Image (cartoon, rainbow, N blue to C red; front, side):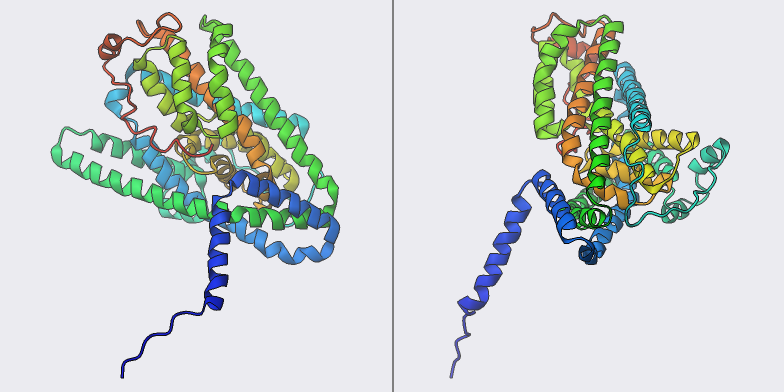
Length: 458
């Protein structure tokens, strides 16, 4: 006698389908709105419910520990991939100029963010769970800081969370891999290509983990902001407003720096910003340097910049240049220190600058790059992670302005470098000349791999 398997009961499957549909809808909903809604609901819950809401604090601690978990894997994978993508043979005059420009302006940007935050003092007087009033340890001597950059044991540096040492190891490995990929020896080149595929796979793996953590971020933000406001009241909102003012003010100052640089290199300010307004607005709205790249390229063409320059500098900048994010990281690190009641020494502030600049090489393509870079600097400075969740609640608001600044910096660098290279700057509005590109020895396609990860949020 044959038996027919019973079909599942509709009553049992309906809730499952509803849950799956709700989950898909949650994933499809833009992260910017999820974070802002979580911030608003958490604030209201904390103010209305009060002390009993502290039962959700473990949900926020989970988010903080997830962020800490990502620090070392992100540094290793993204920095190795980012450095290895720079072809030593293609770097040449243009490549060296743009690399130095991006590193110098990023260092200047994070310094502006730090100085402005020190003047405004966002977060001063605010306390929250996860911070202590313990006396901070004495900062190490400058010579000790530099010696600690080179680890005796790379694995110990990873376990201890020595961010600068891990960055050094990743950059060294990336440089070695770049030379392997471009070796004249076939066997070495094949091994380099094999290792690069492994690194790219590791980067994608870490990106997927990051995306998962970011999907949980609204829960963590809700829990932590609710607990903070339940314990401190509405006064916790003022420091966030001060941080927003410091970040936007720093970005405005950075734009003025760009104006000064353009003036020094005899570039017309009016025509430049007339062409740059489209990528600036697109970057502000989309919050993605890579997504804005086609618009930025059109702006470069309207400025008369040849493809031999912008074909390398713009994709490379979308991967490396993070001036706006550097300002945010500098200001937010001071915010975290103020909340923790820690006064950062000059050496510690210099370390924050170094970590921020070096980390930008790899994290520009990482989802939620600003929050990740902040996690790196907070880890290196030995600050508590709890205030980072407060910053995460307004990260989307800050992300719009910092992406606009990043895109502007890419175009400024491209215009200045084009002006220093013979034959790389035509009359504004003219089409790039293919013959000039060929003479420059580049196809302008960004085939060095620098633009592959730039389509993610800044």
